[in-house]
Image 1 (cartoon, rainbow, N blue to C red):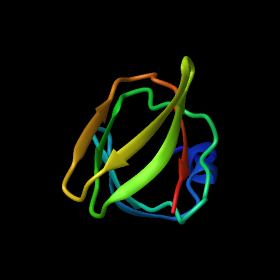
Image 2: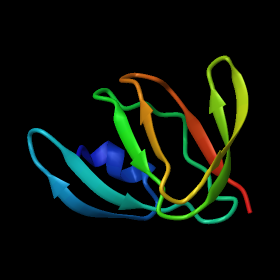
Image 3: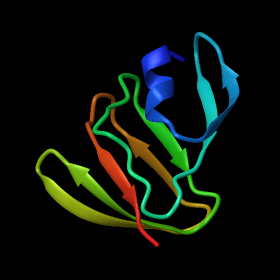
Image 4: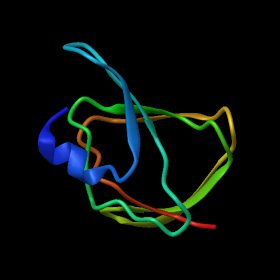
Length: 86
């Protein structure tokens, strides 16, 4: 993981990081924010718990509600910013 990417993630555990895949365990606390960012290779997100957050995309704001067990794919380069809600 690039050192600048580490600064974007307030709380994560690196499970696997090689030339083909990176697997991290990452949590946002209530009202915690992420800066606008993108994933050059895309990103697969698996939700271990229910999550309600405001997701801000370049074309507007959407509220995202995900349930435990949901899987979400974000295309490479899609910029987003997230804020965890309570």
